[in-house]
Amino acid sequence: MPVSDKTEASREAAVGEALARVVTKVTGERRPKSNPTVAAATASPGRFIQRFRYRVVAAEPGVEPAGAEQRWLLWARFDPGVVDGLVRDAGMRVWGRTRPAVVFWVAVEDAGARKILGGEESTELAGVVREAAGQRGVPVVLPLLDLEDQSRLRVSDVWGVFRDRIRAASDRYQSNVILTGRVYRLLPTLWEGQFTLLLGDVAEEWSSQGDILELLLSDGVIEVADRLAARFAGPGTLVQASGFGVVVSGVRSIADYARTLGYFNNLEETTEVSVSRVRADEVSFHIEARGGREALLRVVGLSRILTPESLPDDPELRFRLMP
Image (cartoon, rainbow, N blue to C red; front, side, top):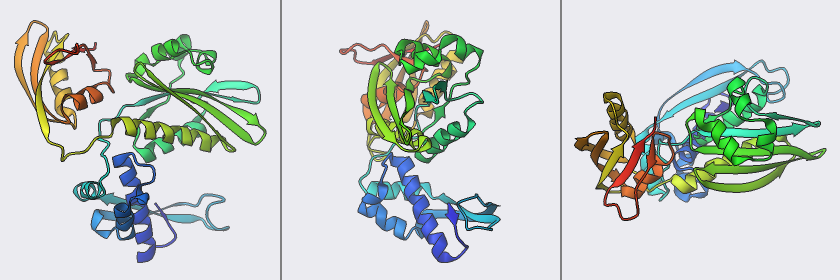
């Protein structure tokens, strides 16, 4: 966080704002200080911080006062347990660490030319996207736009939102979450963006306008974070875990077995994973997960590790291991 000096008052204000940003990352809530409990905590944030330090960086032209050559930044680390307690006390949902990488296929039209963000040609705009995603704790993947991408997808495909072609081009990036859209200058001082968020077979569409291209792209990322948090944020670690059976097929080697077991063990929602049976290319597990079957289905749907195969009346959840 930027600070004007190293006084206690400047540090307190910066740490309070940093705490609000951390709560946003943890909960997905865009305006955490609208919650009175969080607002009170950010006004007196000392008990939440583990350590901090200052560093000096070069001044940014147009940001610092004229003639300034350097500026101070405050780096802070917060106590996870105390922050979790704040979130619980505030009655807010928790958006766990298991989050999908969002593949970002967005075409920008300016002065009659269209280009897809990514590769090495749109470094500045790509930086805007990454910074907005970092503030909300959302992993983003910008396409490489190498020969493989170019052979699979053209600018016109993105501009026309041809979903099947976009999904096929996204396979290499190993995510079921895709943001696609087109951004263009509507008036000399007005940009418009039309976006589609693809979540597996579900599509959510919206449009927005703004007078600055960078802010419009940043708002697009923030909207994605809001929608993902609304869909996937859960009640947190205090929810009691419940047990159920899970069967995974397509497990044909020791490496497949280790990959599957490791995947389940690394999920934040799971509290216990045990193997109950191994047969042919199929492994049965007993899993204890916070939020039960529905929570596990929700989080597995974010990845390309397992694909669901359960029928509505199956007593166990069934998945197939992806290659």
